[in-house]
Structure formats: structure tokens, C-alpha cells
Length: 96
Image (tube, rainbow, N blue to C red; front, top):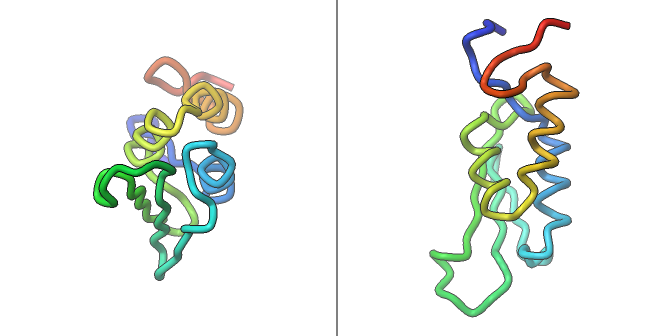
């Protein structure tokens, strides 16, 4: 991966965080191909509660991962993952 690209997130890590979020109704998980769909707990319309994410080669892209982390409240764990697993911190790659 080029140093100018954003890091990706492993499918296992992100799905685990989404499934364990208190904001997600775990009984609503669906998988179609490489896409996953979840519904958030609550009584708002479905289009406001639906969380959909798509993996490519077992990885989720940076934009999808950060948007779901903000929405579901696990941004600090995601930033820690980027730093420890990908060597990415404060908008750039660290020399390891």
C-alpha cells in the first residue's frame, strides 16, 4: 500500500465492533454478497436506522469505517486500531 493512501480496516475488527455496539439490534444483521446490513435500536423510520457497509477483499475502507465508528461510538478503538495495526496516526503513516 502506498503511503499516500488511507488505511483499510479488517472485516473481523469492524464487524465485531458493530455487532457489540449497544446502538445495534443484533437480530437484524443481514449479509448479501460482500455487504452487511444492521438496524439501530429505536423507533425512528428504518431509513434513518439502517447501517449498511460493504467489504472488498475482506477489508473496509477508511471512510466507511470512520463514519460507522462515529455513528456507533467506537472511534477511540478505531483510532487505536489504526495506530497499532496499520501504523497510521494523525493523518499519516508512522515509521516503524
